Image (cartoon, rainbow, N blue to C red; front, side, top):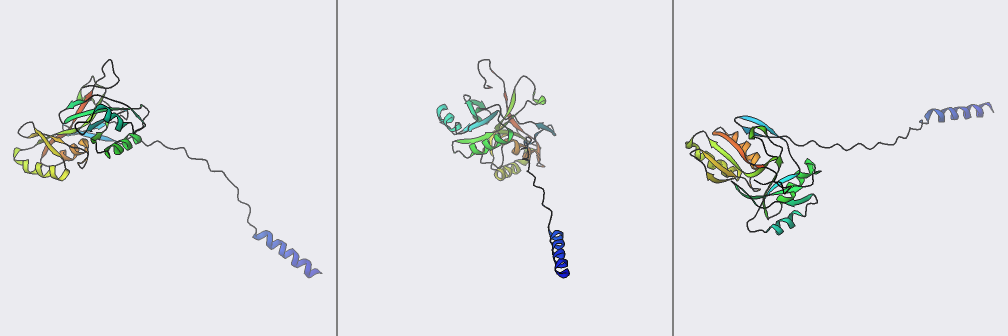
Length: 228
């Protein structure tokens, strides 16, 4: 009888010792989604880096020649944030249009839209827009990135190096503005947009200076779209 009692007590103690305490159940609190900061951009101006702040409410877009305003608008309506389209604007590197997006469009979203539209055969380039930059003067709302940029060589003898760089970057010589100064074009087929290519050219040892051919936008009284 004593043995049975002792054995029963041993089993009870063993079971108690080996039983793990119940773990406390907690409910995970969903993490608040963090908004990604806008990417940092810059361009070279007189050998200094000038910061650029993305303005997501606008884009500059170049289209294949011959497309009507209705056809361009139809393409852009595939983007939910699209609001309206300017008439043709003339720049040194060619004709383009200003695309107005909803004001609440985020930086992340506008970069996605650029990639989406660049897949369209009808578009030759789609570039971002930035807040005004003080060294470009005053009296305008924003600066738009066209498909052109300006390059000045250190010497006219370095033209062969420039031609090799054009081939490497898939950019195009659009105009000769002086003995050592040239207008270069960067469409979506280049290795980067006009800002990226201007910075890359500027960093070459034979280049004196390279900077984008910006579009400076003002606001006419009768429209919410900029004009040159």
